[in-house]
Length: 394
Image (tube, rainbow, N blue to C red; front, side):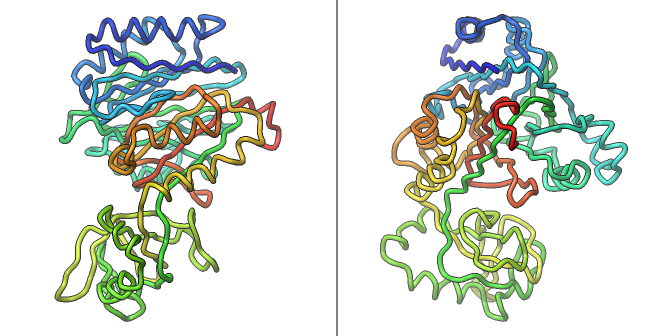
């Protein structure tokens, strides 16, 4: 199994594609490629379809997947404000890559296991699904729920395209085709070992609460009390340092597994607090909330994000070095979170020692928690690849 990665900030699309293809060819032992994933920053969005087609022609991978993003992440750099393209390729004997695309005509088939399986076509020994989607046209929560039911236990990694601020502006790339809506993906099966890391970069504070009344995305009461009153008392108990972190926002963690005892990092889905009704004390959350859920409030800061990512990566140093990786990082991370560039990629490479990867800043990241796949916010979702034959426990 061999991976290679390349990044370019050439502004001319012809020069950019030539630079990427030459870089990849120089790294690979043989010309045949089984898989390629490419990410085009927003500055390249208008030409991303033709650029991907040229990449497909130049490198001729069996499967090419990709999308446009607000920014892209190369092997050693997070590029946020400059037109750029990043690419990772793989030769992986014994691995099968089965591509698929989904669109509006498929959304009414999400509850039909047979129809859904026909559209996705994931083999029975699928180890991982990589998925990218357009946020304006894809009901991602419902789509992931369908995957969780019809392909139970199969992890999904990916993200929502972020290269446009209105419908029709994103490009989803699959081989020599481009889509402005829906979702594209690939099911990976065979001799493939994967580790998925979902680092949320938030830490809980205060105690947990049971939701006693909720209406859609509004929490009306927590354990019979006003959410706003409880938040105010929790904030008053914070240190000055932690109170200062509220400038980064206040977040609500939804416990993934109901009825668990002690809860900590990694046990919650992190959602933004998006509004407060000061008269009623109700709060609005960036997700639908149900009565009897357990929630806990969270803070976000760069130190927590670095510590969490490093903590999750550290066990990898005891394993066979990964051959390659894919990274899907929230567009609220990068220099919006860190006071220095390359926040996530620097931590990853410091621990892993230089793995070939590519990624992008997503408008929502996909990854598993507690055995189910979810759409996240504020996370760095990372997939690490090794030959399964080298890690038989996987």
